[in-house]
Length: 305
Image 1 (cartoon, rainbow, N blue to C red):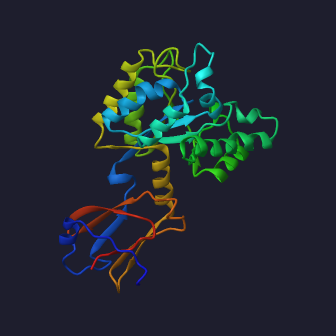
Image 2 (image 1 turned 90 degrees about the vertical axis):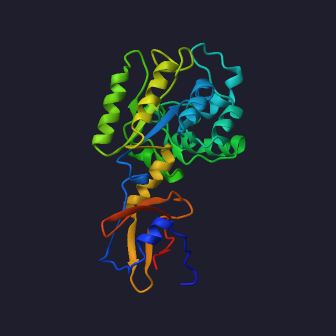
Image 3 (image 1 turned 30 degrees about the vertical axis):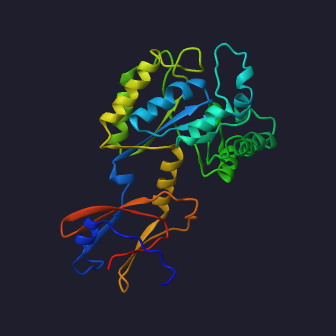
C-alpha cells in the first residue's frame, strides 16, 4: 500500500463521506463524458490554412475553446513560396504559436493525396510516419492523432495510422463550409449530437474565400455563428480537442471502478498506459441521495476513509 498515490478530496466530497463507507452505501459510476456532459464535440481544422491562424485562433481564445489543427508538412514547408491563388498556408512559426496556445496539432500527411491511390503500402507508411519527425523538429511536438487526406482510407491504412498514433479520424466527420452550407445544418447537427448523447467531430477547412477548400459562404460571420451556437449549449456539450476526447472515450470504455473494502480505496483500473492516457475521467459519486463529481486518473487510487 505504500506505493499507492492518494489525492486530496474536495471538501464537499469529504463531508459527503463522513459516515462509514461501504460498497452498498455509495453508488459510483464513470460519466459518459467529462464533467458529466451529455455529449461532446471536437472542432477540427484541416490543411494548415492561414486563416486558421489569423481568424480561428483568436476566436477560439475569445470563446474559450480548444481545437485540433491538421497540418500537411509539405504545405507548411513551402508556405512562404506558395503560388496557388486559391490557397494560403501557415508557416511553421504560426503552427507553433497555435500549439503553444494549447490547441492540438495533428498529422495530415506529407503531400495530402488520397492514400487508397498510393502505389504501394510503403508509400502509405511514408505519408503517415514521415511527418512525425518533421513536427518534432519544427515545433517540438509529435502529433498523437492522424487525419486522412480526402477522408481516403481502408482497413489496412487505418491499421498503419493506429500503429503510429493514438487515434485517427476513422469515422465520419460533419462537413462545414462550401457553397451549400447553411447554419441550420449546424443547428440540426448539434441537436442530434445532444439527443444521441454522442461525440461528434466537425470538419472545417477554410473560413475565408481564397484561403482554401470549402470556405464558409459568409466567411468569419458564419464561423462566429457556429461558436455562438456551441456556447448556448455549454451545459450540454464538452468541447475539446480530438485527442482529448478520444483519450477519454478509450479510457472510459476500457476502465473499471474497483472498490477495496478493507482499505476504503477506490481505483480506476485499466490496462492502458496511464502515462499516455493522462486524461482524467469524471466519476460520479452518490451517497444518501447526494451526488458529487471527482476527476480520477487511471490506476491512481483514492482513499475514501
